[in-house]
Structures are given as structure tokens and as C-alpha cells.
Image (cartoon, rainbow, N blue to C red; front, side, top):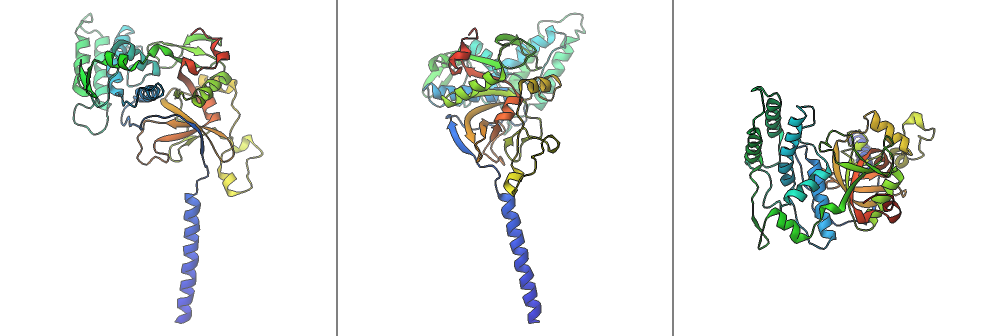
Length: 385
């Protein structure tokens, strides 16, 4: 009996050691990041069940600019921009008889266009949740709005009446709420436009840039992505220059509004990293010597031609906007961009942030927005700003 107990204890100890080692390996972080430069920003928000990343990312970008400009920390309303963008998007859809993009998506310039015309507003004054929900959910609203514009575009009465825009406005007011003409904030009364003026924010100081070879470099063109429904123009520059701008901006205290592709499996939602790995059949050096190196990812060298190929074959698509707020390096010295997302913080490995590798940024960036002063002088002289 004693021998049997000793055997059971022995195997129990072996099993415990095995499970402990397995758990330790599972918890071990393959990537260890050290921050090189971090720009002060505002807390991570949650766009929840909406396709409004464009507004969340750009609103975060503007909040960060206000901090940089010494105007303090202000939490602005992303839904203010959404509210004011739907009607012009609907008008565009009707004018093209339904042959245009209509939905939740948009671009960074949509926010700047709203600010130019209407201003901006604190989130505490207008949060866009008018029907008692705990989180944003635009599924029903977007479906209702799409049904309205589709019905109008068919002009079943023989012509389009001027009343349909009132229906759109009423629907937006029902779901998002009416926007106040005046509001009180920090002891003062503002309109959305006077609030912008009080903070000295100038949307005309910001530009969008992209990098594709089907248009000449150092010119502007209407970027051919569905969410550029307003047909705003982007400066087109070589990818090396685009990355120089990103690095120059971040290293000098400017942040970057980022538009790109996060649909690939390499944008790892569980690990919180985004990389462009070399597949085994592309590299004879794919086998590593130790466990850590075996799990760390060796990445491709991304060229301008690769960018163009993935844009043309739609493996790089315009599906998400985020906000670059820092530069980090891993234990090998590889560069990563500290990327603020708008998917909340719950169950997120890095508190709502991602680490985007330099190769991933070179390949999957559709466009960026930066302050004009963040552009290096040698590149700025080639652009008509």
C-alpha cells in the first residue's frame, strides 16, 4: 500500500511539473516591446456595433492634436461627425441613382469636412445614443436609412420630391438625437463652431497622403476606394517618403491618422500584433534554433510593387481606420507602430492598442492624415500645400 502511494505521489509530481511548464510556455510573451516615442493621447473608445472607425480614429487624432497644441484634454463626439455625414452621403447616393456608396463607412477627411462646416462638440454633450442603449449599435438605423434612399432613388412617383431629406433628418434625430445649437461646457456657452474657434483648431492644416503607382507621384488624385464617396483628393508619394512622414511625425510629437487593411489573419486580434510573415516556402531560413525564435515572425521586405499588386488585386482593402500614437521596438530591434484602435479595452491584450510592424505598415497602409508641419522639408517642397 505504501509503495502504491509513493508511485501515485511520484506521478502527481510529474504531472504537476508538466502542467506548470506548459502553462508557463503558454503565457510567455514571444514579443517584448520597448517604447521609443509615445505621443500623449486620450483614452481608447469603443465604436461597438458600428462601421464608424473613420470618425473614431480621426476624432482621437484631433483630440491628440488639441493636447499637442496646448489646448488641454477634450473628449469629442465621434457621433457628431456621423450625424452630419449621413445626409450629404445620401444626397450623393440619390444623385448617382443608387450607383454610389452609402453606409456607415467614411474617411478621415469626412471629419475635417464636418468641422469646416459645422464645428465639433464634446461627447458629454452629444454621445449619439438616443434610445437607451449601453453601446453604439447602428445596424437597424443603417438599414432604415438605406431603405429610404433606395426607395427615393427609384422615383416611383415619377420624380423625386424635396421632402425625402426631411425623412433622413428625422430618422437620424430618432436614432442619434438632435444636435444642440448651443451647449454649456466647462462653465461657458458655445455653439459647435464657436467651440472650434475657442480652441484654435484649423482643419485646413491637415492633409491626406497615399502611395500608389497608377497615378504620378507628387500629384493629387481621387483615391479609388468605396468610402471616398466625397471624392476628396490625396497626395501621392513613394512609400519610402510616406514612411518618412510617419516616422518624422511621431518622433516630433505629432500623431498620425491611419487608414488601411486589417482583414488579413496577420492582423492578429488575440496577440495584438500585425505583421507580414514570410511563409515557409518563401524562405529557406524559416526554421529557427530555439523556441522563442521559432515563434517570432520573420517578415517580408515590402516594395512599392508589392503595394500596388495587393491594392489592384484587392488583398489590401480600405476596411479600417486607426490612430498611430507611438513607435516601439521589439527585443530584436525591429520597429513597430503603437496603434490606438476603437474596439474598446475589454479582453484586449494591450488595452485597446496594437503593435503594427513596419513591413505591415508599408504594405497595408491605404492612406494617412497628418499636420502639414509633420512633413519633412525635403518632401514638403515637392508638394503644393
